Amino acid sequence: MNDFGDMNTLNPEPEKSQLPLVSMSLGISGVVSGFFCCELIAIPLGIAAIVLAVICLTKKIEYNKGFTWAGLGTGIAAVVIHTVILLIMVSVVGLAVFIEMMGQ
Image (cartoon, rainbow, N blue to C red; front, side):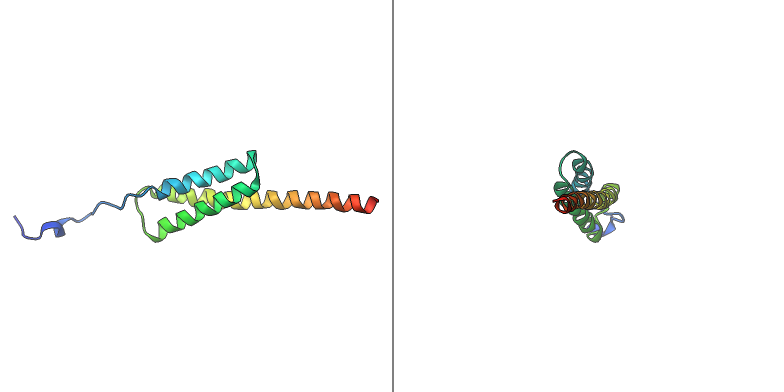
């Protein structure tokens, strides 16, 4: 028997949190929702996934670390892909409006 009590634990239980799972879910939702709905929904979902993943990485939440990285990756993918799609759509509509104005 020793008198050290809890000091004898070498590997404490990692902090359990659902933030990595939420981050990954938001990232996947951001990537998928932009193809079926509006890019204006997908981009904020991607940004939220990135923010939650960064919070998990800075707090050093080791529990479900793969979900954290998946949330970060899918969040970045959602923001980049749907920003490009949004810019292309705005450019095409702007070009169509310009051509229509020049024809009158």
